[in-house]
Length: 274
Image (tube, rainbow, N blue to C red; front, side):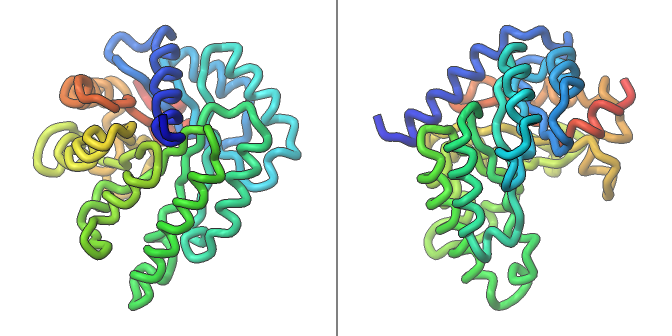
C-alpha cells in the first residue's frame, strides 16, 4: 500500500473509533473542531461534551518547546479525541521552506494523529497580480514537500470551495491539491445546506473528486461573527445549524471518504447560542 493511501486509511479508522463518543441528538458522523486558542483542559472538556471527535489544534512553529501541547495531547487522547496539528500562513505559499520545517517539527515531535495545512495562498498579495501562476506553482510544490515531510501522518489541506474554478494547465487547482494531500477540508462557509449557494452544492465537486480518488473529505462550516452573514451560522444559533448540518450529512454520509463536519472555531462555537 502506498504511503498516502496508508495514511488515509489510518485517519478513517481513527475517525471510526472516535464515533463512539456521545454526540448531540441532532448530529451524526464525525465532528472536527478548529482550535486557534492555547491548548487547555477546557477545550478537551468542551469537545467531549459536544460530540467532537477530532481537534484541529493550532500548533505554530516552535510549539514543541511548549509543554502545554504535550499535556493537551495526553488529556485529549485519554478522552478519546484525535488531535491534528494545524497551522498555515499565506507566506508559506511564496516561500514553502517554513512550511516543510514546521511539518517536520510536527512529525518529529510525535503524538499527533494527523496534520491540517491551512495555508490559504489567496491571502498573499501575489494572488491578485500577474504573479498568481507562479504563486500557485510554489504553493503546490510546497504542498508536495510538506506531505512527504509528514511521513505516515495523514495530511489534510484546507481548501475553499472555489478551487475547482482555478486552472493549472490541464487540471484545476482542486484536482492538484486532492492529488497531493491525503484529503481535504472544504471551507464551504454558508448558513444553509440546500440551494445553488448552499453547503451541499458548493461542496459537491470537491466531494465527488476526493471520493473518486480514494481520499478523505470533510465539510467545514463557520460560526464566527463575520460578514457577509450568509457565510456563518453565528446569527442562526446552534439548533438551526444542527438542522442544516443534518441535511449535509444525509447527502454526503453514504459517499466513500466522507469524514464528517469541521466547525470553525472553538472560541465562537463554544459561545454560540443554543
